[in-house]
Length: 485
Ligand SMILES: NC(=O)C1=CN([C@@H]2O[C@H](COP(=O)(O)OP(=O)(O)OC[C@H]3O[C@@H](n4cnc5c(N)ncnc54)[C@H](OP(=O)(O)O)[C@@H]3O)[C@@H](O)[C@H]2O)C=CC1
Ligand SMILES: Nc1nc2c(ncn2[C@@H]2O[C@H](COP(=O)(O)O)[C@@H](O)[C@H]2O)c(=O)[nH]1
Ligand SMILES: [K+]
Image 1 (cartoon, protein in one colour):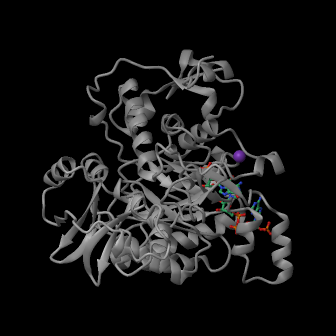
Image 2 (cartoon, protein in one colour):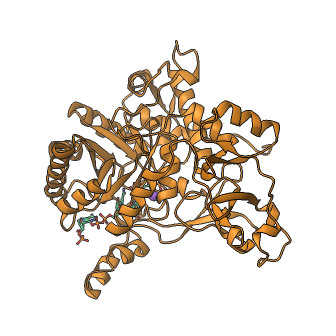
Image 3 (cartoon, helix red, strand yellow):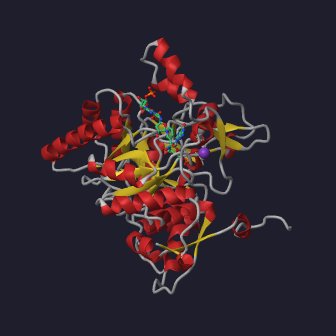
């Protein structure tokens, strides 16, 4: 990218400080833009879900991978639970969505507890293995919570066969005003298709491993036996490894990274599959170069921009994210590596600006916490607004969980170094309550940004983008007004 009028900014910039100027473009359609990431991970859109306990679980992982992104499972999950999560993601269908299922004899309260887990707005009712009905929240209104599901469900259901063409399924759904249909493999439920899901299947390419299964990543800390932890994750089937700590440019990271890389190389020799290793977090060229030399393929960039993060308030340390990404991406590309811009994304524009600064992909945590697919339970406030609880991975709450096998003294000591908040409410956007709704809006914003710059790929965009620096008034001018001023 280049700065507008070749200015050399007098201070470091964050996404809100910057804007992009359009250039003459030969890109005739936004749909022609290719968002495949240049980091060799295999993602087809530049979105990575942060390894945060409140955000990244198996529902998030399969949903995001179906649209081309990837989720990093947090380091706090036990090896057994992680292996189980990875296999569930790998078992999920790359096109059909995983249904919520209830038994015909279950009570309405069970259906209501499960409906918020996914965006479908409906659950498939099973009698044994056979789908016999559909139940929605509307069916559960004004009935006793103990009412059996068979009394309120819709039993005349339209189904699709697993081999039916998606266009024809879409036409049936549109003609019959259906939001969702169960997909059958013989008599068995193979998944569900929603109208929006069918449309998305035509617009996105899933992130798949060489065996055609959905991709998922996992994080590992820098303490303990990094070699065997890495091997465990690789054996479980993860598609990208993230060596993650708050201060990535530390000696302990420089010792741990070659150990993880050696385990990865060993795995590659045995299986023929080379998994990319990401490491961080860094915010300087020096940190980027040291970690790239120690073997990282991808550098995770960002100290303090995260919505759950108190690092800058506690320590004064960090760096405005646009400048951090720009400096690290430049250094990474000179070292043959790539960067992920990690944290602080609140609008689609931030993703576009991170890509302009040179990021190969962009990590999002808190924004995605406020969706049906995030790991937490759905709650509702006094006004009936839906939200999920979120918390930082360096918060007292997360540290307590992560250190539960340590001595009482070590736990108390670790708790002193809190650098994140333990409680926050991430409200679901009523217009975009599912993570795919947010992905739709991010991807359309980014595609459009590319076409304004005359770029049809991430590599071209980072070359062609022209970035200006704006005042707070300039930023404010860009905001829509929902009421008059
Ligand atoms: N991107 C960001 O701005 C930040 C992200 N996080 C996230 O929180 C999670 C937990 O990270 P982390 O706290 O590193 O946990 P880890 O469990 O990975 O521990 C990090 C290790 O590094 C040592 N260390 C030395 N200096 C520091 C430092 N300044 N900050 C943190 N550790 C240090 C710690 O020792 P000792 O405890 O004895 O000091 C500890 O042994 C990660 O997911 C991380 O990405 C956390 C903070 C900032
Ligand atoms: N300083 C802290 N940073 C944290 C903590 N938990 C997560 N993180 C970082 O934030 C990003 C996600 O940013 P967001 O703005 O999208 O939420 C995540 O990937 C981590 O790098 C924390 O407790 N303290
Ligand atoms: K912050």
